[in-house]
Amino acid sequence: MRPGQQTPSKTDSLAPVAVMVSMVAAMFMVFIAVPNDAYQGPVQRIFYIHLSMWLPTFTAFGIVGVASLLFLWKRDRRWDHLATASAELGLLFCTLGLATGCIWAKPIWGTWWTWDPRLTLTLVLWMIYAAYLLLRTLATDPNQGAVMAAILGVSGVIDLYLVNRAVYWWRGIHPAVVVNKDGGSGLNDPMMRLTLMVCMLAFFLLFLWLLRLRVRTAHLEDEVDELRHHVLAAQV
Amino acid sequence: MLSLLWKDLLVELRTKETLASLFLLGTLLLLVLSFAFDPTNPLRESAAPGVLWVAIIFAGTGAINRSLLRERENDALSGLLLAPIDRGTIFLAKATINFILLWIAECFLVPLFIFFFNLPFLSTIASLAIVVPLTTLGFAAIATLFSAIAIRTRAREIMLPLLMLPLATPLFLAAVEITTALLAGTPLAQVSHWFRLMLAFDVVFLVVGWLTFEYAVAE
Image (cartoon, rainbow over the protein chains, first blue to last red):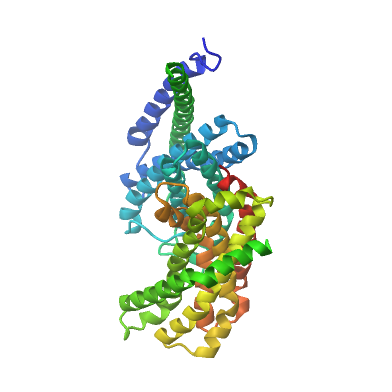
């Protein structure tokens, strides 16, 4: 067995089961168990899923920043794999979060999109990490691409605070289209709160599991590349 | 660093290509954007700051991309990197020259903007005298850093705006907000928080560029 090779551990066999059980439970609670919202009706059910997207999103983007910094510092490919995997998943959850938010906003706020600071910030975030992934695909050399993406990853996190301030001030002066933000947080029913927690847990577990799989795939890709080099070298 | 600056300045003085293209592209953008708004519509006045900054950003992005692309011709960049100087210094020199060129172009573009939008001449120049260089400084810093990255990808020209613009959001929001306030005659004190944000942005990206440029250009 090669030293870099990993055997499937206990976690690997348990993770899919845990994700599936929690996900089925979450879906059951969201669609069947939890009562309708008194004001918003069934539409509000999407909120459990919408809110569950943000924990994975922000965890992922945080990981990108830290892993990028560690990669620039230590030059260990594993940090780079972690950063890429996180950026991909973060972007996925961010997209789903924005989409579910728009679907909810249309019937409730009467518009798909408002230039609310939080929305604007999320959209800017989305653009930064979309550019991050594009940069990797368009890099002429994968090692260079990793370094360049890491610079973007680090700058992205540093910039986040400034973007945050800017969009809040930008919209803060003008009244927002809809001032009432209690739509999602007014979860008075204990069942509602439980549903939200189960849902968040389910999506976070899904995120962790996908992250693990994605990082492993990146390692394997590296290993295949290395083997290919060996084979080519042997042929010559 | 001074000799690096002098080299780029000399190249520019001999060819004048960056300044000429900056100025012409900026003028063209001002013109096109003026077409976008009906001259009789009062909306035009409120769109003016946005028009100015969009023109500067677009013209500037192209020009800054050129400044590092030029170093790739004849592999001049490798020569620069072999020189016994800190890579951070190269960044500062490049950012400074980009800042100077952009600023010179803006000295022509702003009067033209005033002319097109029929604004009071002296008071507008006076009120823009601080905000334009401050924005240009941050813009030059972030664009220089990311153009070093962008030129090493397959889609050189398109990559710089894609990488830079989302990160530059705070800078341009601040620029547009301050310009709007100043053109409307609002006292400076009311937009001081935007000035602080802009200064913070300038400092952050000068430092980030200075520290990470080494990685961006490393072979």
